[in-house]
Image (cartoon, rainbow, N blue to C red; front, side):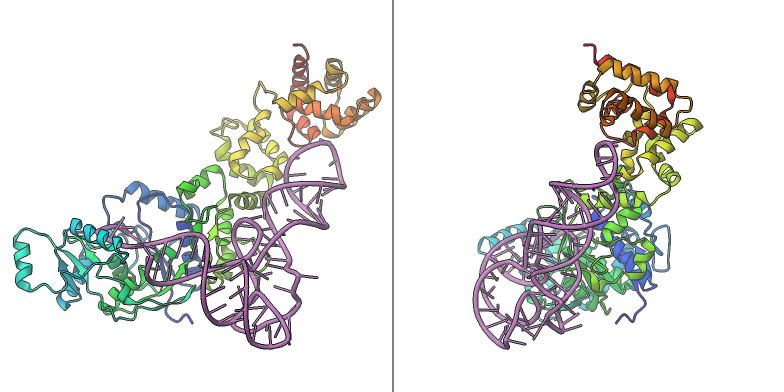
Amino acid sequence: MIKKAVRVRFAPAPTGHLHVGGARTALFNYLFARHHKGVFILRVEDTDPARSSEEYYSSIIDALTWLELEWDEGPEAGGKYGPYRQSERRAIYDEYLHKLKQSGGAYECFCTPEELEERRERMRATGEAPRYNGRCADLPPAERERLAQQGLKPCLRFRLDPKADLTFDDLIRGRVEIDAADLDDFVIARPDGSPTYNFVCAVDDANMAISHVIRGEDHISNTPRQIAVSRALGFEPATFAHVPLLLGPDKSRLSKRHGAKAVLEYKEEGYLPEAFVNFLALLGWSYDDERELFTLKELKKVFSLERVAKKGAVFDVDKLRWMNGVYLRKFSAEELFERARPWLEPAGIVGMEDDERVALARAALALEHDKVKTLGEAPYLVEFFFTEEIEYDDRATKNLLKLPGGVDMLRDVAELCAALPDFTAEALEKSVRALAEERGVSAGKVIHAMRAALSGRTTGPSLFEMAALMGQERVVKRLMKATSVYKR
RNA sequence: GGCCCCGUCGUCUAGCCUGGCCCAGGACACCGCCCUUUCACGGCGGCGACGCGGGUUCAAAUCCCGCCGGGGUCACCA
């Protein structure tokens, strides 16, 4: 079915950070290209200087880089179909614009935006579809001259044949029926000569030999226009594949309104790119009825547009968190620590220079290994191993107060700890349990109180391992310190 | 409103093309039990869906029709 050399592109407008929907579109393009040993192109759609910015441009590059979606051609990367920023392709567009105008495929329109808006309003009011009425479609040359003389600057409209067959076969949706009569003559260049989206998109896709246009479903309505432009210029339109939109919990298109974050924010929160990519791939695509863990490499091998769903998918952070945890758990203690380092350092947990703290952090994190869902949580999870003064949360205080024997018992435990010749988890556990039994107190109560005294929390790693890691001196100190909750 | 698209558990989905193996399978979330000093991990179990109505058929989530619902798009933005 796929005969031409596969060349696909991801074409973001640098008017904002890369959001999850865009990332998924980029991913599908990337996977499709790699699966077919094709070429993945990054094209920057910055034709609107007012809204585009360098800052967003580099932010998008950073996000794609983080996700490891390497492109073969693009700005910086280069390629023989460049330049890859539309703002640098003006000469190419001018040429085609001129060609279209010469052939009568486009005409000058002198209607002002105000007039157009007014007409649209009127049509809407009567329940009509607001379309351009073709007023300037066949202006006699003399009339055009006269209007131009008045200083009116015309924009350029594409002359759309209402009888054209613009129906296309979408790789995901199947045949999409389009009646050209429902469309109107759209603007392809502004009065200042700058070309608009539907024109440049068609030109670039043809010019860059794009074989498949894989993009969001919101572009379906643009497709017939681009097909028309493409044909008018003598090109064979690409094959299209419109992927369903990513949705918010209310099923409308995912947006910041839903609290949707930019891709880089997920990076900052400590999601792994490999987990993020895996999760994204499963939004609207599936392999079979059960497998859902895939590396990028595996995805390249098994991805296919045939298995992309038609239904929009709701972005569920809970599942992302779960999946991130799955990936985190696959790491060795060493890997986990190295990955968490960028979060531990700014939090003041470890400094590059301090070997002892590094070793402690690594070991502490290892104790929390199966609890970590995002790397951003790492500092919190190991924090109490490092702070001098720990604070008891409410439930921890309650557990301390519930210790049978109260202060005395706590002192005894502290003494027992201080007297232990080798402070290992095993030895500690043995003697603590023995003490509890001797006093007729349930071991659990003692353990809970000790946990509260040592970490200020009611949850955490295995108590004895945690204590052993903290070290005898500190454990004894914290146990004694905890006796203060009784006197109030 | 016009046009286009979509409709299986709360969510992601398998199954639909090539009717029966589906009184619908998996995963996340949730609930319970087990493991256990807590949380988590893990194990076991539970809750939970074919939008509705017709039709075709021995048989329909799967085919046909209608309805309903949701979304997208209607810019000199991309």
